[in-house]
Image: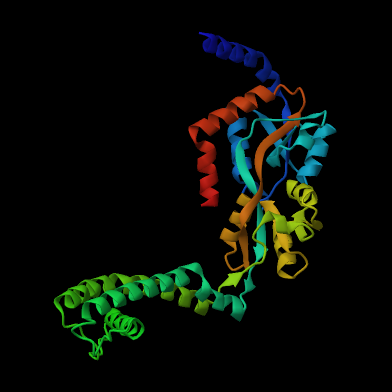
Length: 356
């Protein structure tokens, strides 16, 4: 009953609020990069734009879009009353929430701030290191241990009745046993050593079957190592956020990435677009790019030839909302529409269409 009363109250309240809203043409600022804001020959689309259009249509809002050079400039224009609303991947940050004239809708998208690194050709030494990796070393260690065990068992079974091939002394006897186990494993079978006792032959039969599995495992590990060696795999020395301090970071001016770079004590290299930031990394003017991870993924999807890669870590979680002036009656209808779109899966569907 209480929920029904609250909902009825909201609806009654909106009846008085929405008519004046529909009567005016909203000045809607737009700022952001693809896939949130995409511009094609004067036409705009993208996750943020499409969500806004659905909200405006549902609430019968009249508006005109006004391009803003950066989110920071858009926030300034909103705070000074030049626009009524700011649409795009506008990060909801503490500094922006502290502005007296600016408020935000609830988040319509939750993303992460990503790090983009240049791909560097791996050195010969680093390529050889694949053979010293745990997968290869562990396979060799296990194989050696198994050969020792099998060789010792064969020696114990054969040392009394077959001492010519498997001497009674432990060292040469076990060594011959390991040699026999190795040639059996590789299916070479030279024939220079062969068990003659029932126990020895029984052990050999079990070992022959087991060898099929052992060879498959070892072959897979070595094949993987050789593939990495021959492919000229690429690497980057930055694998942890702690390594970012003091590095040069290409960032878009007026974005949350610029604030994060400053918080991490990095040297800021300002850029006007993601493409320009990536070019600065590729030309050694910066070590990394800091930007919205969804935008980076979209850019790489459309430019697969770029010699860059996303870092295996992220810097921070970002919540994106639309900004409006404090006290604007748009707050409730916008939040209700965003909530409805998120619950219906419409926001996720719009995102997947562009990101996947």
